[in-house]
Length: 298
Ligand SMILES: NC(=O)c1ccc[n+]([C@@H]2O[C@H](COP(=O)([O-])OP(=O)(O)OC[C@H]3O[C@@H](n4cnc5c(N)ncnc54)[C@H](O)[C@@H]3O)[C@@H](O)[C@H]2O)c1
Image (cartoon, rainbow, N blue to C red):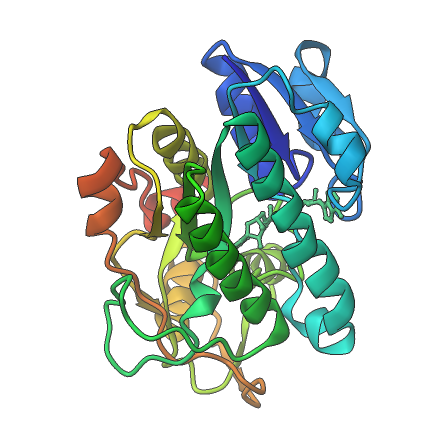
């Protein structure tokens, strides 16, 4: 089959492109290389088409989405702190750009699987978080993802097949450091023999999901008969940041104590998914355990 992957030169997108190529599909990547790097696609660059295009350029992307079977939409601005500085730019790329994708899908009868985010939930008292919990994003980035969900519902009602995946905290090699990169940051420090720095008391919990599991969720969602749905994509397990730091120190064998530093403004206390809907809807489960991956890389 032929698919377009927007944001295919980014962290998630590049893993997804490699999975799709492995599965024998023809892939066109649309990415303006804002954060993405062509090197992320080195392994497959001879077997894909790469187009340096901005998703806000409706005519140009539409032209390249005519004879395809579906769109994996990953392109977005993803740095929460930057979204406070330039909310208009975030809206322009993440919301107007996404609406372009939905419009084209509607016009050409294409299915879309796109990246939403657990950031649509904001602070929740109760965990694990189910899809129907209240949506209350606490930053402009999360708001753009919620606006996308509202658009997705609008285009679904017009008959477009859309699935939105609410990714929890993704880990894996090649992650953009500014984006939820706590594991990458701890790894970098441990590699230098330094202790991890924790912002806040470390009791905040996160559901860390491996990037290849995210790629697989996209693929299964696309080939399923399901549409008109937003689902959590997390492991269903959570770990506190303090336990994460201790686990990583233990694995390293170094004699270190994590440093506790001042809490970050607006840090979410509990992020922990219930991912049974993804399993029940299109048979997806996460396969990689964080601790196994950490043992491998440290
Ligand atoms: N990484 C995470 O933990 C996480 C969690 C939840 C949701 N997400 C979402 O997953 C998707 C992928 O995130 P990622 O971590 O791979 O980020 P990333 O920054 O590595 O990838 C995003 C890609 O989009 C491209 N892009 C940005 N603006 C563009 C534009 N105007 N036109 C074309 N391409 C453009 C970038 O160049 C980059 O390659 C994003 O939609 C993000 O919001 C990520």
